[in-house]
Image 1 (cartoon, rainbow, N blue to C red):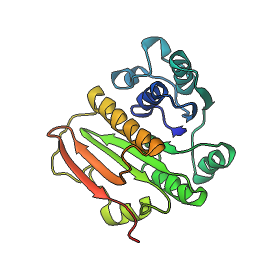
Image 2: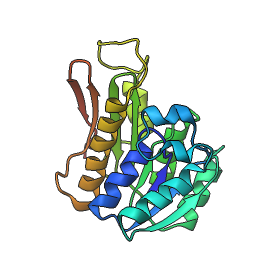
Image 3: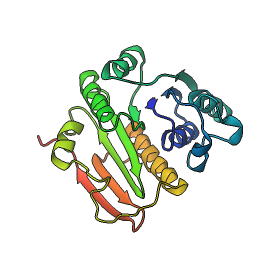
Image 4: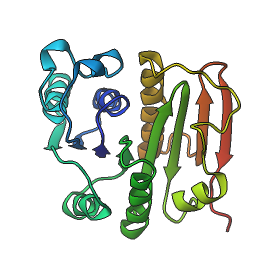
Length: 214
């Protein structure tokens, strides 16, 4: 499994998937642990401040399971940087938990998913809203097509808003939901292709079936 971004969502997703028995991780992040991360990123402690995020996450995984872990401490600045990972490593699914460059990195994942026939999951949160989009080449519409028709503006499709910043329950719920979707993708447990957005202020749910019309 390729995971880009081990911050608010990715750090918790990795832990959940290690506990589920995922056997191999390629984790990518250029950042170091900062004190502000401790409010919502479950993989890090005060003693980790100043350390490489991918090295800390590797240590955490190896304390949980016998999963193989490849760490890449690198900032992805362009699609070519991401494509090098698609070319160099074998994985079943790619997970984008990175938020920079905003939106553009989602398009990189989508383009490469279709070029290399790899399913992807793009997951995020904003304020109290959790989103994920599961793209399967040949079975679902592309992320570009979805964004073109249903582009999310102001972080929301839903009407509910809150001025507060992200808190740990939101990031944890986002990671749990996205991890469950990864499990579904790997096992065919539910076999559902959809976009989902949940506003945790009122638990209003928006869903959109993204299966390709034959």
